[in-house]
Image (tube, rainbow, N blue to C red):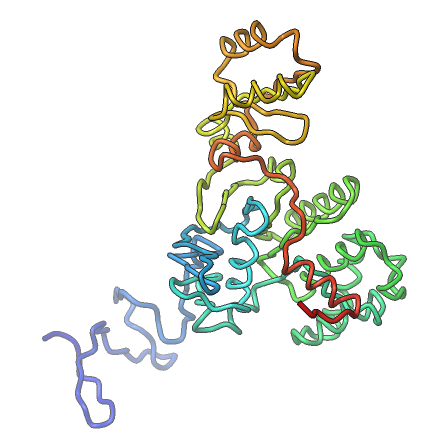
Length: 375
């Protein structure tokens, strides 16, 4: 067998990468000039290629009692992408993020952050993460700056770097003039912006945002996304966002639609629309009798929301025949081109709408107000 012997604790092994012995020159020991080797010198740092994906999820499952929250979920997120998890309340989005943040352990499967297994090395995985949770997590007894300062201390960011980064991030989210203000005096939108800044204090490379614009008005939601786009451009971020606002994900690099714990589709928005999208007819009948007849006649393609009925159209011919039959009995009609909303409707059979708070959300809010849950 080739190679020279290598001794270790009395055992003799063969070096699988034999190298020529060094020769002596006038300057001391030097390597043989003509030697070709298949591995780097011991004095040279090894070059480790970064994983192609920032996040890798492989066959993740999670169950709460009889409820299957995640069912064999598999996908990856490319480095630098803005990746959207789109689904209704209870789809499994938050559970998945909690697993990636090492808050929950899955029942099966693996998840990796920058190549680090989140179950085997949770501390290593967290170092790359910045997180904005669905529920507020700021300390409202501290000032804006103190919240960022404390976060930087927890992550061991050096003082000089910490101070410079706080100033930079406050400028990014337009909160410089509120630096010394107690957080309890901020609006909901301003608190959300501060949470984004806090998530970046330790120079995170992957940003998780769980329903970051929930409860915000349209203007605050638009500003939030503008800050995220700016941060992504300046810091080479990978952003993973969960939302049930379809209009917010139109400009994402990829959209993953999840419902009942299962991945239904995962692609760029244009491809999703081409493959699963439909033209939609939104109609408001003149009376209840017409509404009932319409839903009964098109039960496989119609969904009703109050007085409005939404139908998946098969094209111009369907629209024309619909108008011939119902035209005089329709008060209002609009036609929508294929959109992510029609994609979701096609895949799940229902529209993505806000839902009333469930038992968990009601209990949480009751507790925040100082109540005691008695039933």
